[in-house]
Image 1 (spheres, rainbow, N blue to C red):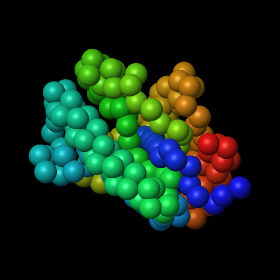
Image 2 (spheres, rainbow, N blue to C red):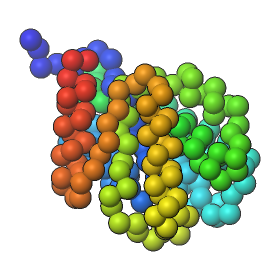
Image 3 (tube, rainbow, N blue to C red):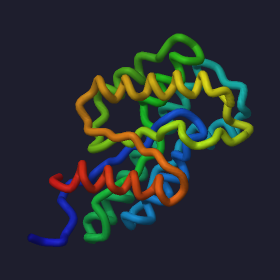
Image 4 (cartoon, helix red, strand yellow):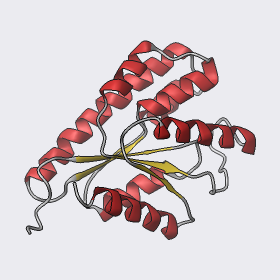
Amino acid sequence: MSNQPPQTLQKIVVLGPESTGKSTLCEALAKHYHTIWCPEYARQYLSENGTNYTFENLLTIAKGQLAGEEKASQSAQSLMTKGLTNKLIIDTDMYVMKVWSEYVFNNCDPFVLEKINEQKYDLYLLCDIDLPWTADEMREYPDETPRKELFTIYKEALMNQNTPWGIVSGLGADRVLNAIEIIDSKLMTQ
């Protein structure tokens, strides 16, 4: 058996409610697997355009997320052809856009729904709400009730699709180790 990475890029999406450590986890996983990660485009968009957004802005954010993911996929593919990695870590996908749209505006653009049906990932990591909420100018839901509601919405979405997934919990290094265990156990045969 060879130690060479598989010939297909494994795409791992990290999602969950705000302030659950998604970006920190993505960065740590990219370091562990010697790869890159695709940041959440919404943070860039909101920092450049302000935090007052409309339903229409969410479509722009969704398209920006997809463009960033495509660019990151090409970079990770290049690393993979050199035998350096076989993974890409992605912070957020179209499920996040759907949940965000429906939670805030009770509506979702058909483009986002179409992209959900087209997307192909190897694993989802759902970040648990066991981390304390941390204030940030881009975060909207400091109360426990919306965090629980959003976590449940994400969990139900993942339960109703076919890609393997797991819940990441724990604090600090334990959270990262929990994610690595899920990735290694769910993707070891791929």
